[in-house]
Image 1 (cartoon, rainbow, N blue to C red):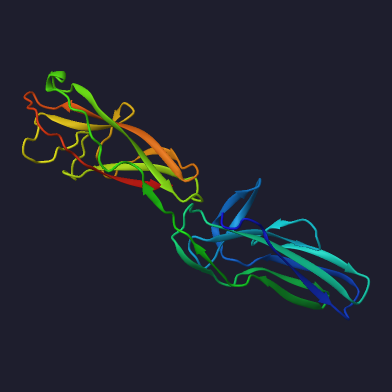
Image 2 (cartoon, rainbow, N blue to C red):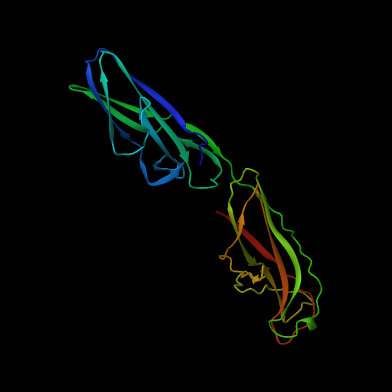
Length: 280
């Protein structure tokens, strides 16, 4: 939601030197329908387009303080009986602006003048049209700013190959917290992450490649675990961490050594991952 309150305006249609009798006011929304609706405060409202592709509006209209009707292309009528030659009809429109995106692309946005509703008031041989429209306005969308709070380097404990006697046997190597810190006013995004193998970007397995360096260990690999599940390093694969709360989120992860070959030799086991976060 962009608007925190209803934006309301009332137009007074003042008629003078008119015939006494019953006046019929026919009115309906004139905005461009977005082909969708929104539930808000227990009611359903049609959405209408603005000049910005990700900003819409919805609202209500009423006459002389009567029943509020949701904006709709279906016309509805009100009547007013005048016992004098002068009378006033007051039309009230309320709108809110809305975006389905939790975080909009940052920058200046301009909402051009919008014809919200039009009406036609008639009495026998008299008729006249009226329109209510918004003024043009601008607002600034602030982008989400987040930083990774996970340590850049994680030191694993030294282990013995003897403790991994067969292919598939594993032993704990270390732990870290995968975390983000964002703007305090950031929406409550659902956050997901994906990992890729830095030394072998095409790696789609759960075995993390070791850096090619002197004294490199062989017959073993590293795995990153989310709970008891080993992470697959497919760049397109994502796993949900949870929802941001007060601009922060953290999730415990572990790293384990795993034996991958019948023959294994001790040595250095350095590896690296890149992490991509997505917000929804």
